Image (cartoon, rainbow, N blue to C red; front, side, top):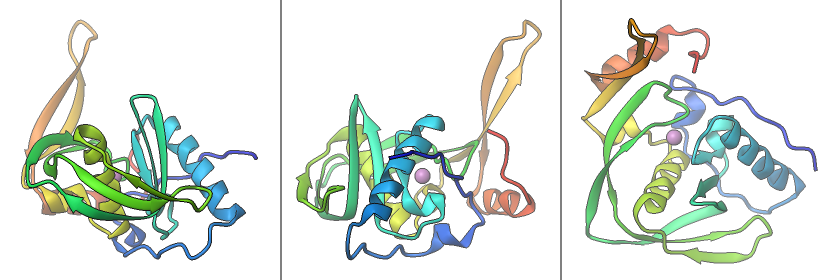
Length: 188
Ligand code: NI
């Protein structure tokens, strides 16, 4: 099957704010979508990607962590650990923004795999974080909704020609306003 890189939509596109629909039947179209999502995630150096980010409002996400790949259809979080951990997250749909987000350290997720088989996964740590971030996308929730600790990531080139990254504190409303002004997707 041919794989294709799809366009990632950014903050301001209403599809990102919709609740995605459950997949009633996994057909060739869903499998193609999953393949394309892997390709798109790799191309953009992401560790996770949800279908709404490629403008498809279906409950599907893909992830890649420590050499393992995951494709989950209709994921449901069945259990969450009480412990919360803070971590730095970015999102391909909100380029150049970074957020400190609290997530459950461990969760249990039931879902279907790309062939429609029932699976149960208990991710911990960063994989659990990725899963929670992507499942949020399926409910129209973004990192700017989950954190008050938000930053613009600014890359500067100093006199020696070295690239340096600077974090500028910002707010949710400032980020939303900045993305509304952009008619074209920002350069990554
Ligand atoms: Ni994201």
